[in-house]
Amino acid sequence: MIWEPEYETLSREELEQLQLERLQSTVNRVYMNVPFYRRKFDELGIDPEDIKSLDDLKRLPFTTKEDMRENYPYGMFAVPLREIVRIHASSGTTGMPTVVGYTKGDLKTWSNLVARILAAGGVTKDDVIQISFGYGLFTGGFGIHYGAERIGASVIPISSGNTRRQIKIMQDFRTTTLVCTPSYALVIADTIYEMGINVNSLSLKYGLFGAEPWSEAMRQEIQEKLKIIATDNYGLSEVMGPGVAGECLKQNGLHINEDHFLVEVIDPETLEPVKPGDVGELVITTLTKEAFPVIRFRTRDLTRLITEPCECGRTFVRMSRVMGRTDDMLIVKGVNVFPSQIEAVLFEIEGTEPHYQIVVERKGRLDEITVLVEVSEEIFFDEMKKQQELIDTIKKRLSAELGISVEVKLVEKKTLERSEGKAKRVIDKRRF
Ligand code: DLL
Image (cartoon, rainbow, N blue to C red; front, side, top):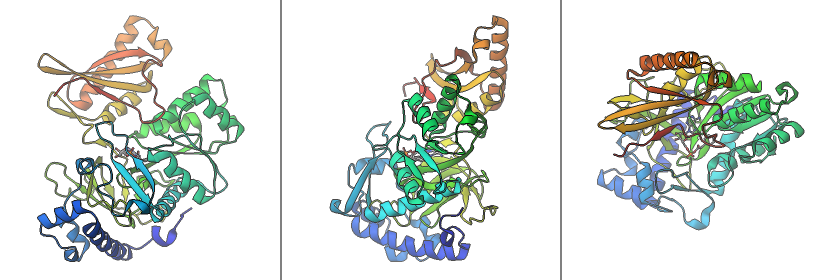
C-alpha cells in the first residue's frame, strides 16, 4: 500500500517544483534563525534570494557532523527551545554526541514519513508490530513507534534486549512484524531455534530492518530463518531518524522521501557530484524540518541512486543499500577495505556463521588484518585438517576480493559479542 500516493507518485516536474519552493523557504529560515548558517552564507557571499533553481543548491556550503559538535548542544536549532517538544541525540561513539530537536510539526511529519516506510514494507493497521529498537535518545525506537501508531497497527514497544522475553511476547502476542537492526534479527532468529520453537508456529510476516549496514546475503538468511519478507530502511538522527528512505516489497533499493529530503551523491575527495548512478557519499538537505533544518549534510554513507522507475508505482528515486561509511573504510596496506566486502564473502562460504569481527593491528610498520569467523560446532571440533582447509578457503576468497592478504581465525559459535542494537564489526587497534 502507498501511504501518501498524492506525494509518493508525483511526476518529476511537480516534485521538483515542490522541492524548489521548500528549499527556498528552508534556506531563508536557516539564514534568519541559525547564526552558523548566516555566517557561512555571508562568507560565501550567498543571499537566500540567490536560490532560484534546484541547481543553485550546489552553491550552498556543506554541513558536517563536526559543525554540529561545535554547536553543541542547541546551536543549530532554528527555533527557540520553547517550541521544541522532543530531543534526541546520536550515539556519539566518536566523542561529543549531536543533539537534535523536533517541534510539534516535525513530529507530525516524522510519523507520517515513517508510516510511508512501514506501509512500503507491508505493514497495515491489521498488523501487530514489535519494536525491538532501543527506546531513548536513539531515534530508532520512538521514531518507528509513532509511525506505526499513525498507521494504526498494534504497537508493542518492547525496546531492545532480553531476547528470550522478546520471543515469548512474539509468541503470546502474535507479532506479525518485527522491527530492529538486522544483526539483532539474527540473534532473535538463532535464539528461537535454540529454544526449540518451531518458527512456523509464529505469526511473523514482515521484518523492517535498518540502522546499520547489512548485505543481501544477510537478508536471505534472515528471511529463511524467520520465514518473513525483510526490507531495509535508512535514516540518521542529524536529518530526522528513521523515515528518510525505505524499501518497498520489490526489495530493490530504498525509496527516498524526496518531497522532504533533497539528495546528492558526491565524490568524498573532490566534493563534486559523481556520474549519475555511480557510488559516492550521500548528501542530504532537509526541505521541511522546522527545529533542525540541515543544509547539504555530509552523511559519510556510501550509496548510489537508482532512477529507473519502480514497479510499485512510487516515483521517488531509490538509493542502493548503504555499502559502508567513508569513516568505516579501513585503509590497510594502502588498500581500501569495507567490512561489507568481507561480510559478502563470508556469507558465501559453507560452514561459517553470519557473525564475524575484523581486527586491524599494526605489527612493526605493517598493518595486519585478522578476520574472526564463527563456525558451527561440528567444524570447530572437527579435525585440524578440515579446519585448516576452511581457513585456507576463506583466506583465498578474501584475498581475491580485497586484493590484500588477511589472517583468518575460526572461533567457536557464540564467542563474538552479540549486539542488541548496532553490531560492532571492526576493532581497529592501530594508533594514528
Ligand atoms: O540509525 C536512524 C535509524 C533508526 C534508521 C532505525 C533506521 C532505522 P543514527 O543512530 O544517527 O540513526 O545512525 C545513522 O546509521 O548514517 C548510517 O551509517 C547507519 N544506517 C542507518 N540506517 C542504515 C541502513 C539511525 N538501512 C547512521 N543501512 C547512518 C546501512 C544504516 N546503514
